[in-house]
Image: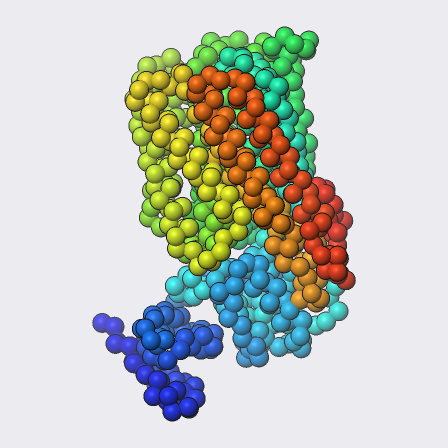
Length: 176
Length: 454
């Protein structure tokens, strides 16, 4: 017996010029365990995808016409197969991500370039969260060479790969 | 440890493979081997092995060094085997080709050349095969695409053992009745398992992964792809099952080969529908030249399958086998190989050269290493030459075949020049070519930085 998704239509808020973000987050907080959220908006709420992925929801989009979109955010059950960088990994000690990137629409190897550019600008110990449409196999060795730690896995649909990257201390040079 | 690092010796494998391709094309232009000579003549064997082993197998081995880790998400084990394997394979394949030329009587060689060259070739395949096998074994449970490679490697084992037996019999080192029976009757099995198993089936598996990656198509495992794997594996298993029948001198070969042919055709039909779907469901609207140029190869595979069925039904296999093998080796396998090299070489060059500088300084894109509109016409010329050469083989027009081979040689030479320009960063604007931290790659040898990689 599955619970019906909770439906939230934020088009009236958007038409009134308001920001529905807090309303959406409240709705998420009030979902029953395992319950999905069906969000209706007057645009494709791309920034929300990585926020919701960070909270453990995968998403399915549906264009309703007239520029309106319905997005079903489904909480993930058992997610397995976490891949991590070598060495001592205690994810509990990691801070919340300070940067979030949705790179799902980019052609390879562009996501790798964007991620490496983003981590170059971050402080040691800060965490980046990124969504990709493929597992970034060639990125891992590059992160390792630069002294960064990472953990990632596919979402429940198997179509989006999420990766957390914790920036290492500077001073790591090529070949070191 | 997860991920894929750059393969150190892949570019050297590609260089050796392309050298063999150019030698093979030159042989055809000069009228050496089939169709000027008989299909079973030593000259034809020299030509066929220059292409199937020298070009296609070295290309596949080099590509797998880079792609087995991509298929299983883990680095390759025993990477130190890649170089000795390459040395053994080049020496062995070169020796085999010379040995066949010696059999034709045009040069005087001791009969021992053929078995020694076969032993070197088998040793080379054993080394590289071991590296793949250990990597795949440790990555279990394997994704479907990697299971194609497993079956392809199994077909390679049977193929090289049959070939080795042939070389030892011709070299006068094996005289057992069973070995002689295998030499007489096993040639077609050797060809089917080599071209259809090791080369075609492995290419299919790798293509699923490469195409979905390049076009951003959904890459979840589908039932239709599992049907391709099951029916293809079944077909190859049945063909390999004929070997013990020959050894035992038992009848019943047709009972295995007819269902094998049906299963093989079924695998290609499902594979074609999968490929069509991957192109149709792509999220990337504009496709790059390597994926456009692959369409010709898929067309050639479809045409070869139709031709195969036609020859079987009309009982004209003996007359049409030359055209069929040519279409598979050049239209499908060579077309696919050249098309994918057009992407793999720039990508590996980009990662080797700019990897250390990524994110730290502006770097070119992978596309900046090539000029697609310049190469596009040469891919068309290549496929046109394959079409004309196939038709001229089927009507026995030898001069036309040599002319088409000349066009093909020119097209391939230009494409090799394009690969070289990509390696040399010639197409990258000078201001972007070598930013701080970037490292100019060698043409086909590993750079110092790759030597130091774990």
